[in-house]
Amino acid sequence: MAERNPPFRCIISRSSLFCMLAIATFLFLFSWLSVLRSTSRPHFVDHSSLPNSKLFAVVEDGNSQPRNQDNIQPSIPKMSVSVDYEEEGPQVKELMKYNQNKVVLKVFMYDLSPEFHFGLLNWKPEGGSVWPDIKTKIPDYPGGLNLQHSIEYWLTLDLLSSTFPDSKGGRSAVRVHNSSEADVIFVPFFSSVSYNRYSRLQPHEKKNRNQLLQEKLVKFLTAQEEWKRSGGHDHIIMAHHPNSLLDARMMLWPAMFILADFGRYPPNIANVEKDVIAPYKHIIKTFVNDSSGFDDRQTLLYFQGAIYRKDGGFVRQELFYLLKDEKDVHFAFGSVSGDGINIASKGMHSSKFCLNIAGDTPSSNRLFDAIASHCVPVIISDEIELPYEDVLDYSEFCVFVRTSDAVQKNFLIKLIRSIKKEEWTQKWKRLKEIEKFFEFQYPSQEDDAVQMIWQAVARKVPSVRLKLHKSKRFSRHKGSRRKFNAITVPRNFG
Image (cartoon, rainbow, N blue to C red; front, side, top):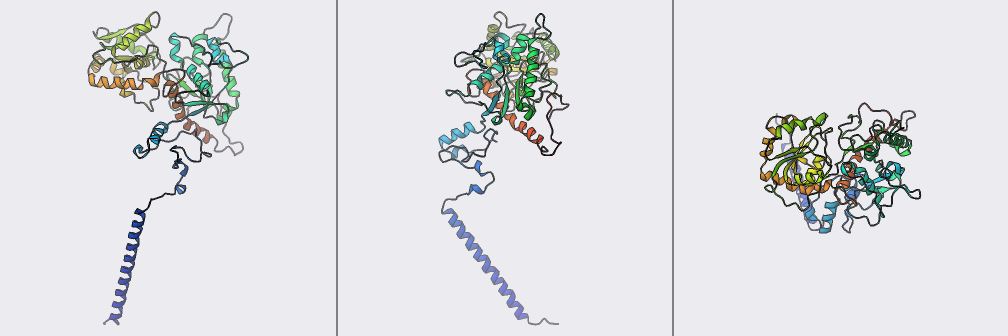
């Protein structure tokens, strides 16, 4: 049967098509005009509508800091931001490059009795003063091997001088006098000096002075409101000598330890997640104005020190027997007594490679002596932890060899001989670039060892805050608040 009114249906279809074409044409013209308008005038973005818009604001004078800092905590490390420096003016370029990852750590330091710090160096307080007047005279630190574990001395001096109006050099930490404003709490106990000088039992003593000081320290710290508030997690305790703080470490484990290595610590007491590895202060002389090249350094491989060691140090005697007859290798017993330091300085300054072998503990001062000598370190220590390794690539200036490989006949000497002039020169140049990171000095200078340690501490602050904030999740529930117990040793930290 034929459809009714077919012409009328055709008219409706054509009308609909015409309307659709007209609407499409109108929209196209409107979009084209909008594009023309947007390209003919500056394009402004309302940053106030963006999340965390304060971080995008730039002050008109070229300062890259947020406009309104009233509600921003400047002590929290800022995340690095990719910046196109070519689009900024010269002043802004320098500011951005310098401040991109710079954090000034705010440190509260306990005013401990001098018996815990400079009193151990025979400094006598005057007029009830806790601290020496370092503008007048700085107490001397004992020389020799004692110097290698002297970080406590340098860090404390740096804090004491941080508020001087004439303080120079880029500063990484500043002392604050209100603990509630601090990022970390610093405990100025010279534990390495205490061990080196006062760990021997004197006549008629039941406990040596080192043990008594540790007991007093634990009693003092655990009674402080700052310790109770955080359970010690935001406290910094220095124990750089492997035997320092030997009695107290098991009771002060929540704190952030500054150590040379983890060789004599169980992993639930000290570990790379919560603690900071700091360099030794090198003993030999820094190689100033070093223009020596590959061909100028006549000794291929150098080691001088104690050969027979316990624990991981067994490898030293194994290597001695493997290398002692190689004509261009110096492997000999030596000490700092007599003219030992000068002899070692000359030997390392004239060698291409310097061995850093595990001793009684994984770390050794020879690594830092080698860096100061621009003698490419050969590290044979499987358990070693290295300072600032989260920001510094040691493979650029060191050679790493597994212990199991090193003790194989001819393996080590063949490996060293295979490193040619070009590769060695690259590592030598890099050593000269990074040596400042391992220099302890007062006053501290930008990116020297003192400031690098503070920066390493600053990088731990966010994880400390995370633990503290998590501990407060149920603090409003009666009876459910978790209390820190600094005396109980944890089964697994973290």
